[in-house]
Image (cartoon, rainbow, N blue to C red; front, side, top):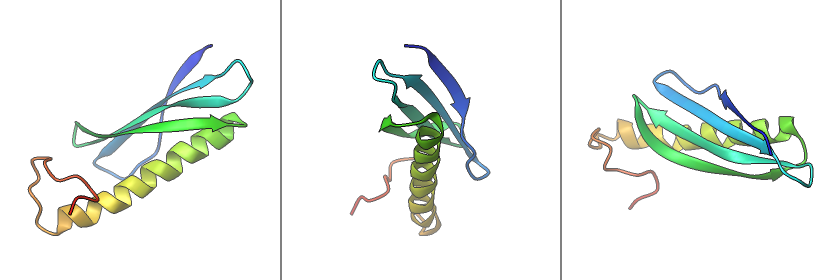
Length: 89
């Protein structure tokens, strides 16, 4: 199973890479990591998708969703040290 690492487009200040592999069944699955200002913030598991394009689209959608949830947390005056996790009460 060959693995390819690629970057996913995310808003400025964020970085996202994804490792994507073709499974023995011909589907694609992988892992993506989001970081904000150089600090890892989230790991995303990309479950089996029928095509390469679908797997990249799923990773991009999930990364975008995480960033949109994170930004309001930061703008509410939360500690920028990274101790707040989106969704925490």
